[in-house]
Length: 192
Length: 375
Image (cartoon, rainbow over all chains, first blue to last red; front, side, top):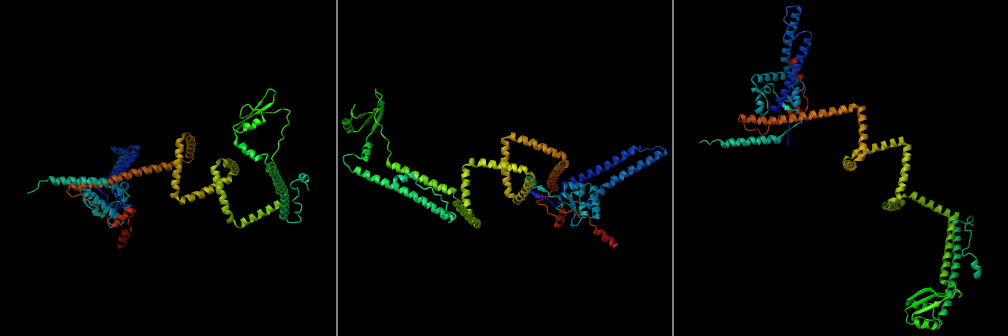
């Protein structure tokens, strides 16, 4: 037995998998950029892991280039993730990872995502990360599966693909949980 | 005209029946000739009958005499006897005919006339010098033969006349033209006749296919030779017919599909029963297909790309489905951890939100413009 998923609130596992895919893409991009830069600088004798410190004029110039590259790479690594998220949320409502998992960020009022709405969501996302993921817990327990960042931005995440859910498996697990619950109630000593 | 004169003349006079055809109508000439021939024949036949009657009267007078037994009495008596004849030769090379009979009175009758060896045996010795008995034919048989000959001659004369007379052929032609004109004017009269004849002929051919098979083979051979000579025209014709046929088939896919399946299954069963026939075909088709792919590699590339995309899509959908199922399961455990009852059903989002799942939402630029305008 299957249940339609399109248009329903997306759950924590799907969103987590999409997040992991996005992190992998960002990390791969940063790593590739770093490798390209370091390889290019190696051709002119600059090693990014060990910047030259000679007192010669060339050595000083090369040292500046190396330090600037390091700083640029650090800024790039720090900025690419927010830019990535805001860009994809604003244009299309889904990052590549969300696209793979078939989910989409939408506004709860049914209007399309805007840049500021995306920025607000990003700020909320960072807050959730800063609270060690406590802000993400409402996704697991709330009826609208919204995290703190969704509440802040007024957005929600829904399934965008024409998929189905394996209801039979869910029902079996639900039944198992009910039985466990009943057994726990029966084993409790009667007060009085 | 006496008997001899009549015998010397032919029984049916050899007249030229078409002599007067220019003076009168052909049909009248034909009818007159036919009547004349018939009258001649009737004269001759009547004469034969008169002779036969006179002969019978004479025979009746002879039968009325009491002393001599009639031929009919003799025949009746003979039919009651069981006789056996034995033919032999005696010492003087004279043939002996021994007749044995079981009739009780025959012995006394024979004893009076011939020598006898036992009671029921009569021996007859015939000398070589004895005059031979003249064979006589019964008059009735002779009359029959004469009538038969007369009839033959009559039929032959009529046949000759019908065969060679231009009047008859003209009459036939006129009648045929009339009939054809009638059928041309009213083809509905001809239709049941043709249908009945065709049905009868077809049923006959179904029972005897060996009759029609050589004819069909011969015609098919001729037709195929002609088609080979006009291959270009045949190709265009076949293409046109096939196009029409396929267009018609596409209109009725439900009727065509079972037919194709039945034919295909029969064909596959035939090929499975005799794989030796299949192998050359497969080899030839395989070679053709490989040559075609070598000349058109883009088809293969598209095919492989399509297959790869399908496979990737399938894997992705499977991962999505598993993740969606896991969403609910993980929520179940999370709610259990914090002591909440399991959620029976997730409330759906508002319809406007659900509608966004279908289409691709674009960035709203209207709000930014408003703000700029306010500023």
